[in-house]
Length: 487
Image (cartoon, rainbow, N blue to C red; front, side, top):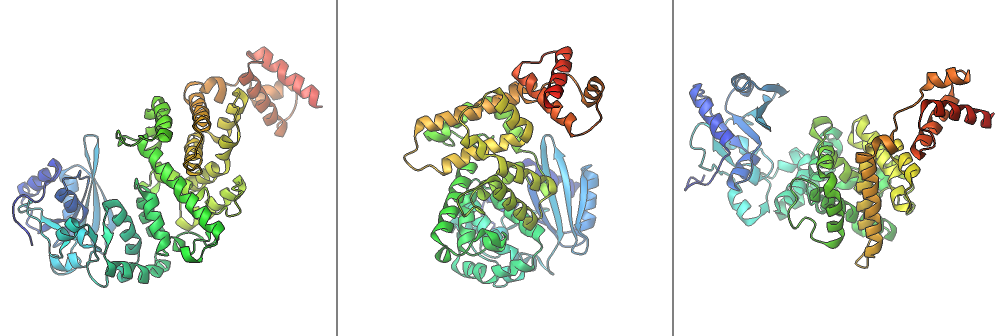
């Protein structure tokens, strides 16, 4: 245990929580544990706080929720785990309360995953003092990820996946004994629910250096236990040259996708887009940055963000297309297989399939007159934004050091033209206000409902885009003429 000097620096919310608990006379021993303590040690921002309770954790959680007028969710009644959602201005703070995993604090900490996550602080005592029973502070200084006990990964194979994610996230080297356990017990992932695997995998996809973690997952034989068999994710020594090429390109596209997403995010720095290729794209995208950030921040089930789905799309843009054709239908089938394997929502699965099946048109077409832009956006809707991101990442991932700047600038011009159409020319090009509806056409032509109505509506909409039809009388004359010509 270490208590020398000011080791931990907490956000004001944690101090406020401590004062509240003391004022309310709470006597049950409470300890902040895990990532929040590590972040306090590193002077990082804290928004998620795990609290280990030597007593009735559910009772304490309910009391805190009442005192803070916050929402509460019982995550595991049998194990005594609850989450309190606290709104603090524009911030959302999560407080996770859990009963000790044993009789003492040491028993709780030794049953955790890695020593850097087994640090603690007394929530009712001196918060600045670090409680370190397993050497986690030393491992942080030496940049080592070490299991808490020899049984840590065997007892929960998801920790094999988490070891790779946290070593990537925190810049730590996995300790040899821990790495050996990761290799040995990763096959146990077959007995873990797909939902738990998915949630941990998406945390890795959220990292700026997700491609680095994916490379390690594949090397250790973990990725092939997450993805369906069809992707041929064998150990590097067992792969064919064709599989190696597809895998290498997938990682390059994923790297470029992460770089693009970081460059348009609020976390962008002066170095985020220093290189010519990314810099030119980002400069042009800046006019749409607010709208793009809003889209990327959207979330799906269990907090999965739209950003992570795009990183997954980048990874799939070459996997599952080992014949190098990367045709839309093949990629769409790959997306469906992965969506099922990871238990994604129907919305996520449909979106992934749509983007992968259509994005290559941006790379294949060099001319985008109004009608082509209309058809692109009318078929894809907002998913067209993601198709543009994926096309940009795919273009950069497929280029070597000899990339022709003129060709890249031409692609950037296309991307900006398409985005400008969506954001600034919506009613002129994407979806003109209808001059007639289906009932109007049936009444005008004296015909019954059927596929022809949809065909005529589509033809009329495209005529509006081209500017050849501008009024209701012109619309009626147009559908009558098209009906007569096709009879």
